[in-house]
Length: 157
Image (tube, rainbow, N blue to C red; front, side, top):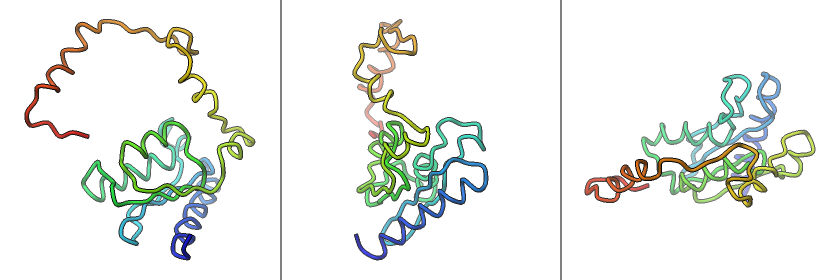
């Protein structure tokens, strides 16, 4: 890791500590493109009453607005902690080139942020998951997918 990359990581860590001091969760994230920070933020789940307001998701949202694009190829994310399944999914969907993190998911679990059950749930048949899950009305739902598949001017993502 280069010295400048260490500085980006230190900034993510600093954001996690500031968040904690301001009533948020102890997580921070920074997104960098071409050697410049384009987005930095922290966890605001409890501050915003938004369970999706994790540091990485917040940073991705801000970076997308800054770049006016849903595609963050060419960018790197520095996170104070190994991302949860939701954030990891967002990192992949946004096409970030690289992920660097400080604390591990075990470190997070040790202080009460345990997301291992989500990974486990993904391996369970849908009808046996904790959240009642049922497939319904596929014949009507599939119409939008068929229309998407036939659409000539779609923007794929």
